[in-house]
Length: 357
Image (cartoon, rainbow, N blue to C red):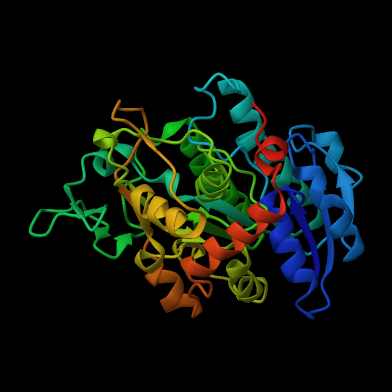
């Protein structure tokens, strides 16, 4: 199988490329990256040693895709993955749309030209903010959980948010670019006969993730705690009860292999949540407790100031992927945190390299 990975030198892209290259399946892998993310250069040499053919290219420039070889499948792992993108002063809203939506259009045109399939790595942030922000929750053992006996919005249970949950705006500018990319990908698939799959990912985490509080929260928290850098519980009374699930990107590979070989399916069966589910869900306060046990005590500031797009509890339910594809995560959160901790201890300059101010 000939496979192209966009964003191949980012955390997710490089993890998938390494896992696929070492799987023994005989895939021929190539990838493109614009190397604008701090830390992405650190993955280049290792991928070359594994035989991954690398191209410097920016998905926003259609001409950069003209020199890429023909492939059977494209895995789109390139994006500005921050929910604050376009509104935080680091990037403009136009830059966000160009990266996340215009880049998808250019990839789809590439797929059309070579009749390649596309697997789009999407996000939990396509789900509507308003009902999630208003979710009735209660603190339990240092973490929010859906309040027992309360009416929950359609598509949400104690197991998490499923694929039927509302995607009505607002979903953030970031979420909107990913949702629009999903729609365009499915339309290209139907119009031009291309296999397309949408995998909506929970929080992806693991060793070597570029640690920023708006993107790689688990890596950021562990690295910052280890170096005794300032940390704060933001919003929700400053208690740190907000919860996310996490998933190691390598756990996606068994699902990707099945999608490569799948027969034609209805559009509704091509969208699935992929996540660590409730078993991997953890609050910031619980993460702090883990860090304290591993690295020793550290003070975390409490700042209850509300922020836009904040959600108290966001866990994805992957039951549809389990039913339809026999997929479930393989790496428990304890192993993910151990992996990040080992990497953090071995790379004392990781935050400065991957998330400079």
